[in-house]
Figure 1 (tube, rainbow, N blue to C red):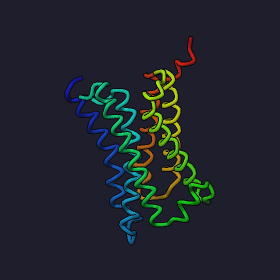
Figure 2: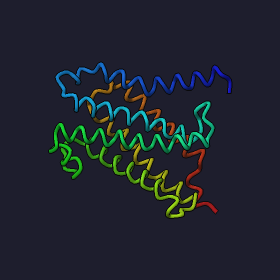
Figure 3: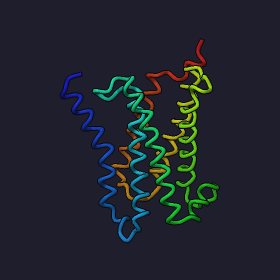
Length: 200
C-alpha cells in the first residue's frame, strides 16, 4: 500500500475516534459536573471509538498491521473496550445508583438506557465466548458465527444508545462515528463470510 494512502487511512481513523473525544471535552454538559460523571462520560465515548477500531483490526484493514497481528491486537483492544464499558457503568453508578438499577432492570423511562444495557451484555458475552473458544474446542465457523452475531448486537445497541442520548458527544461527530461503526462492521462481516456455517 502506498505510504500516502496508509497515512490517509490512519489520519481518517484518528479524526473519527479522537474527534468525538475533543467535542466531548468542550461540551457544555460538563459544566458543574462531578469528576466521576465526566470520567464515566469519556469512558463511554472511548468505548464507542473502540467499537469502530475492532472490526478494522479483525479484518486486517489497518496499514502496517497484517491480519494475524491485527487480530492479536483485536483481542487486547476487546479487553480495553470491556474495561471502558465497566468504567462507564461504574461511574454512572457512583453518580446515580437508582438510574443504573432502573437501566439494568429495563425499567428506566429513558429509551437509550435499554439499548446501552443490551449492548453491554452482548459485549460481555462476546468477550466470554472469546475466552472460552479454545477450552470449548469450538469449530472456527461456529465460533465466527456466534461472535459475529454478538458483535452485531453490540454495534447496533451502541449506535442506537449513542444517537438517542443527548450527552457530551456532538450530533455531527456522533452521527459520523455511528455511520463508520456500522460500515466497518458490515465490511468485515461480508469479507469474513460468517454465515458460511449454513452453506453446503
